Image (cartoon, rainbow, N blue to C red):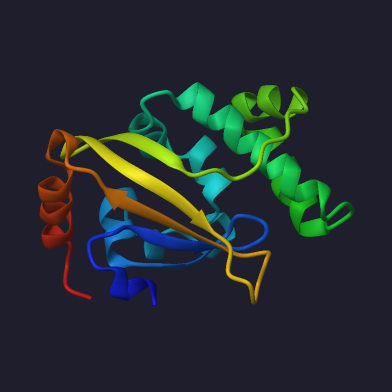
Length: 167
């Protein structure tokens, strides 16, 4: 289904924020997710640990703090789940920024809105960002980025997709 979304970057996250599926446009925007080992193919892990992804956020500190607060909200629904505990402990050991954000004990819900990203090749890109929860699996979420016309985002994204190797 997400491949049919064309030039709209989209991915499905599991309850622990692991990437379960993603389309070509998402890989064009965020990098080749297939090249990332499955053990760390996690949205929160990459937000805190991938320097390229960190540079993409126009306000990384705020985005990272919100990411940790959203993970805290999700992990609270799964207290005692070893997979959440392992992720949180690995992040606390590996990222001082995650440690600081986690200690704030903030809780946030997943939200839609505007996303501004600074891509290393194409520069500033602007998207409308939506989080959709399929009825069949409330623990999964579809994240959809719709390019907005500002900064020539549709044309820049098209160039990024075109530059990707054939599937």
